[in-house]
Image 1: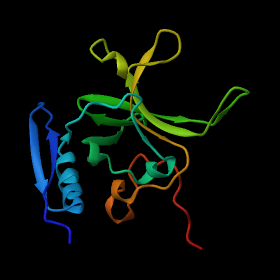
Image 2: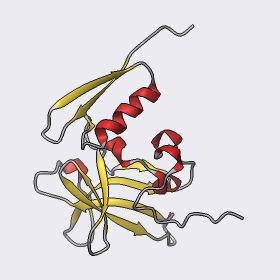
Image 3: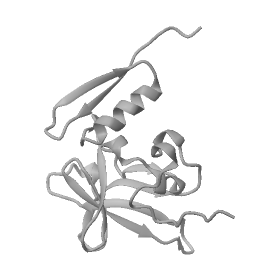
Image 4: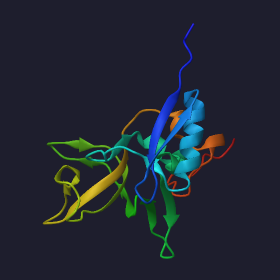
Length: 166
């Protein structure tokens, strides 16, 4: 028998205040994470250099509230994500194949680097440009069901067309 335990998650609200929530199991903890994430609270952790790495199959159903982010389409039609006071632009990257490397297609959310960004988060771009990646969806693998929108919903920035029923 597994002993009773409590799981906890520390979130950061939009003002930077740490808030800890507790739950009896992972399902309840994810529900709390979604609830507070929809209010702009994000997990209290250091940003990941290169961004979160998830399979490409996760993109269209990814629940942005899990990381305290909110997807939006600008009046100009540009797909972006708001997270922690920053705006990350959707970039759909085609497959790259050269003699030296092969990169599968990807969808990434990134923004221009700022002078206040830690050096380990900055990635080199063209010329002198540097950027910071929030999430990179690339490669094979299945979409993790715990990270998907409830009920099989598709997120508003989905890029693949839903499959037609036969």
